[in-house]
Length: 350
Image (cartoon, rainbow, N blue to C red; front, side, top):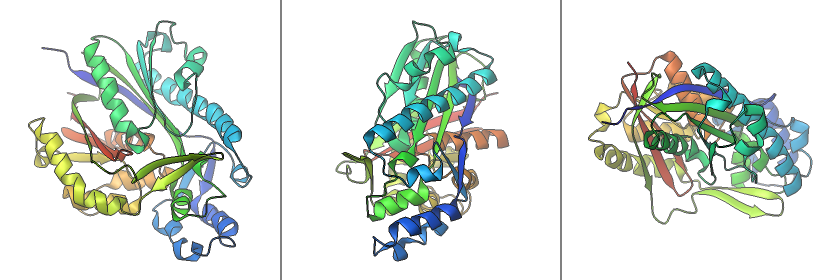
């Protein structure tokens, strides 16, 4: 019988610049109201988003200047590489390991393009061995925290004894655009923050949680719900207004099917640990999964303190949940471009 794969450590990292939501709302009004007649109707999103503060890789003044691909890419390369190192070093330190002991590194990031990829750029800082196996993953978006963790767990199971480091870094603030006078861009301005998270996994080790299963569900004909459009200025966010209602209607049947394949039911899960895309998404998740209103408390707290950081956000929630004390069985879940729901089933390690 193969040894169980456990998460030995988990760490999060945030960039240095913090923005109060009230200041972002004032900035957005100054920038967009004179040019976008619908702004007044949308301005309430800054209050209803459930966000108090978020962190970014650049100060607010930077976002008020015209920025194209070269400027956004440079900010991504500098900021994402630094956050990769911060999160990875903290996770390895918690596990009592060094970069030289990592055998496989999985990196999930969808908010910038880096070739060589982030783990290669961080090799000297991290002290990775020259023979480390690198697995960079692009395009998972908000689902990347769950899907990437699942991939890392599968690699750990397939390579008994190997130390697998999973790092996800997203700089969503770089997708905020001054030139896009759209509802989606206003919502992005109200929601997006930057952050990173890292996990260390290994088979047969003692950790805080065992990965007992993982699954994905991609709905057909849903490519227009979430993603990026690309133009000379950078990424333009694609957000469908229907995301909360889609989640409320469609998530539960998908979760039921994913759990059934693991001989589980929703009633067997003590806690769902969810990616908090926004207040309305959190409410939709509670309704869809039959969770008491307000039950996704860690999700609301992370959203309030950090905003929507895309893929790392779910791991920020997992970190709060494990510090509060994980229940016996939990499911980490996130939704992202595809449109896809991704889950990782966890059992508290004895």
